[in-house]
Length: 215
Ligand code: E4P
Image 1 (cartoon, rainbow, N blue to C red):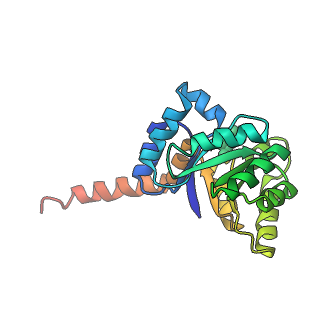
Image 2 (image 1 turned 180 degrees about the horizontal axis):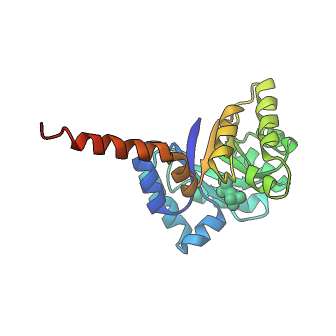
Image 3 (image 1 turned 180 degrees about the vertical axis):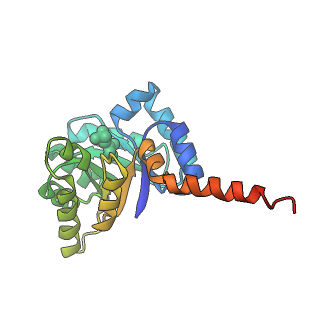
C-alpha cells in the first residue's frame, strides 16, 4: 500500500519523509488555508521534499476554469496531480486533462457510482472520503470495499486513495480490503508508529544493558 501524507504543512511533510515511508502528498484548499501561505509557493516547496505524486486542487467550478488552473499548476513540477471535484464539470475537465497526459485525482467521492464515473473519465486516482462518511453514521469502509471490488472486476487502472483517514484502524481496514493508497494526516502517522510495548521494551533493554555495559 502506498502512503501519501494529507497536509500542506512542509515541516510535517519533511518529518514523515525523513522516516522513509512517504510515496506522495495530497493537499486541498482547507489544508492550504490552514498554513496561510501562497498556494503555489507551498506546492513548489512540497515538490522539493517528496519525489512522488503531489495533488494540488483547483477551485474553479467550470471545466474551462479547472483546465486553465490545471495547466498553470502543472508548470510547477512534473509530479503535480490535478485534484478535481466530483461534478459534471470535474469529469469534463478530467477527460480533457487525461487526453493531454495530465494526471488527475477526483476528490469528494462518496459513492461507488461516482468512483466508477471518475475512472471512466480517465482519473489517475479517486479519493473516497471514509472519515466524513463515518462522521454521518454511514460506513465509509463499505464504500472502499465496493470500489476495490468494482475496479478489480473490470481491471480498472485508476488507483483508490483512501481519504479522510481519521485513525490507524481506518488505515488497517483499507489495507485489508486492498486499496492502493491511503492519504494520512501527520497525527495519524504518529499514532500508527506508537505502541506502549515498544516503549516499555526499549526501556527494559536499556536498563538491563546498564548492568553489563562496563564489564
Ligand atoms: C483528501 O485528499 C482530503 O484532503 C482529505 O483526506 C480530507 O480529509 P478530512 O475529511 O479530514 O478533511
